[in-house]
Length: 204
Image (cartoon, rainbow, N blue to C red; front, side):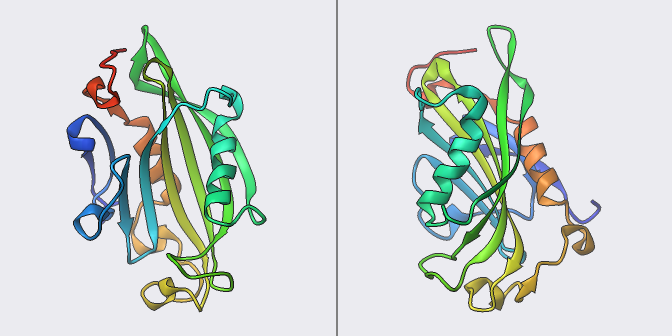
């Protein structure tokens, strides 16, 4: 998109990186973000992109890990009764290898009814959530890349003030790269530059 320049963004002090549009702003410049997360938002469209480091969930099978994390996310956001898993799959990451074998990213796409911030029930927005789980077993880490795309903005939501209530305007109509493509780009371009980020210093 002519109006949507994509650049490689350093994450966690440059230890890892991935590429996504410049319209996604670093939330840490506005408010405190947990050390295990990098959070980027596009407030004009209520879109967000989150990169998160978690301890490896050994009890979760690889083939169902992305769906498991999507449902876990729904529980965290009090949206477990609204989650609808639309799709799950796998992406190979050409820029990330372990033992000369590309590391796969398990993916899942679903819909959630999510309230903004501390707003409770009755103010939920319908969001499509794209989630990738990169299983870095050599450093006992589950890395998540999650993108949120608004589908319907509740008139009672805080988001309605800036985005407007009702069905969200498609990204293409605003000259923006669709969130689905933002997600694919972020996942496919993911790289690790410094394995010491994970504590063990293991290298692929």
